[in-house]
Amino acid sequence: MKTLKEHKSQIGNLPGIVSTLVVVGILIAAGFFILQTFLEEDEFSDTSGAVTNETGLTIVNTSTSTVAHATDAGFNTFAVSACYGNVTGLGLGDAIVPNATIAVANYTVGANTGVITAVGAANYTDVKCSYTYLYGESAYTGLNDTIEAVRTIPDILGLIILIAVIGIVLTVIFNIIPGARVSGA
Image (cartoon, rainbow, N blue to C red):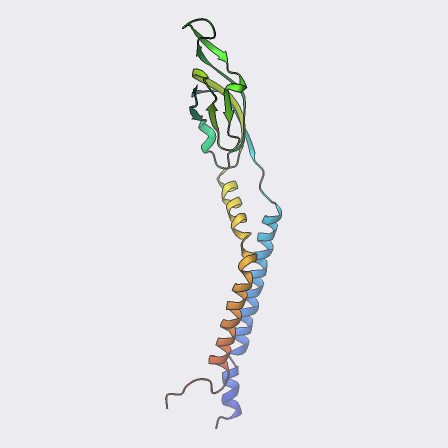
């Protein structure tokens, strides 16, 4: 039969476990508070950019051209202000008209892709386009990706808490309750 002193030594581990759980709980709460602050920001603001007369684009038949800044982090809100190119024809036979203004009806624009697609029988070479766009820097993209990932935490939070509670109960059962251990006698 165990004495009261032996039972007290087994329960002596309890304050350490409780202290650890309290500290972990405080750290988790602080982390969620910080992440909630980021979530309330919705998205970080964009930086605007503008390009005048970017060369190397083509508007021929149904071809596509992608502007150079389309690969910038967080590229969006792409808008073409004007395009010019060399065109053959225009009722002048085979004569090339240099730097002719390309009508908006001759191309379409992907607002978030930076792709310019020729429409119909448009036939412009040596195209130069001026455009504006918005973009974010690398930190912008990283933070927005983190914010989107954190939005899924509430969906799995119940499961995380359940696993933690089961772990605590098993720890109490096997380490603290007297007589729960199998003795090697």
